[in-house]
Amino acid sequence: MQIGFKREQRLGNQYKTFFLIGVEYFFHGLNFRSYYFDQDTLQLYDKSFSYNYSLFIHELNLPIQFKYLFKRADNSLFSPYIIAGYHLRYLLPGALKVKQNGQLIKEDSPELKFKNALFVNKMNAYVSLGIGWQKNSLRSNKGSFFVELNGRYGFSPYYFETNYSASSLFINGAHLALQLGLKF
Image (cartoon, rainbow, N blue to C red; front, top):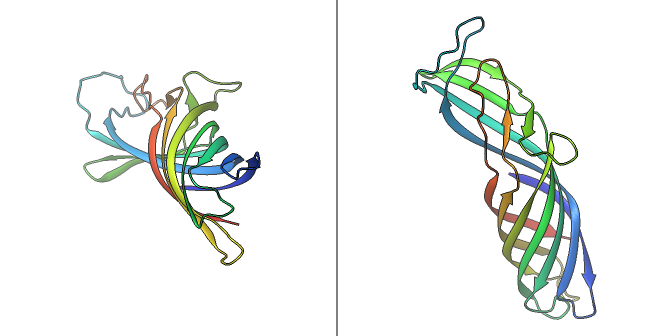
């Protein structure tokens, strides 16, 4: 799920090309099976993944995007478009639950880090490409909205380190999202 705000600035006089910049809160998660090591025990990898991990990831994103409309925004009620961009990402602490046979074993907020960091270990980026459709605000009607199918690909996997989890567990950052929004 994503919540955000973007400022859109028209480039040129044709009402077809726009530059967008903003801020987004991106919340997503994943489940996987892995090891779990109790405190003060010998850590043996026996190839049995009997623990279910549920990880929720929180990030702040700074999108920098370009949008091209196939119909002018100033005299068309609806406009299909394509959008491409670069997004800086900052990872916030995650929310992790470890279960075995349905029983909660551990609940934690691990610090997530990028394998290949940009400036600090919690910062990296991804690129995005999407297609969308928007209802434009014309003088005769108000209330604009958009629907966008957006794909994102992260430049670096991310991970967390704890004394109870397996090491070298890297998570790739590729996402496909359907976005709905209001324009004002």
